[in-house]
Image (cartoon, rainbow, N blue to C red; front, side):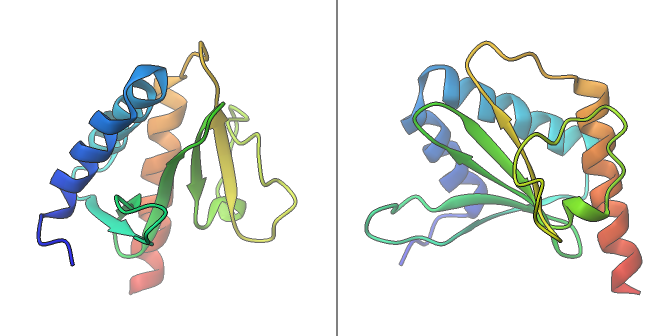
Length: 131
């Protein structure tokens, strides 16, 4: 059992990642928090092979998860298929009926305004469904 607040566990996860993946996920975390000041950070799916778990951002439901792989950082939006994506940020999991993801690779630039708009839209969708 991990008794640390989830935000501290996410800090630990980002520090352990290091390199460009840690820097990218840290930057995306900051943008998520900027886009939705009410966002709650959680850590889910802890297991022996991944004791630090998966960072999750929620506001009346899951907005997105953040995972680091060898060659990418992946943000998966729980209800991404229901979101408008005029900047075409979604580039992964496009065939699913519910989720959509964005894969960031080393050196990728983040369209901060479009990303924050997507996060804000996801949070608004969750809030509208919670009524």
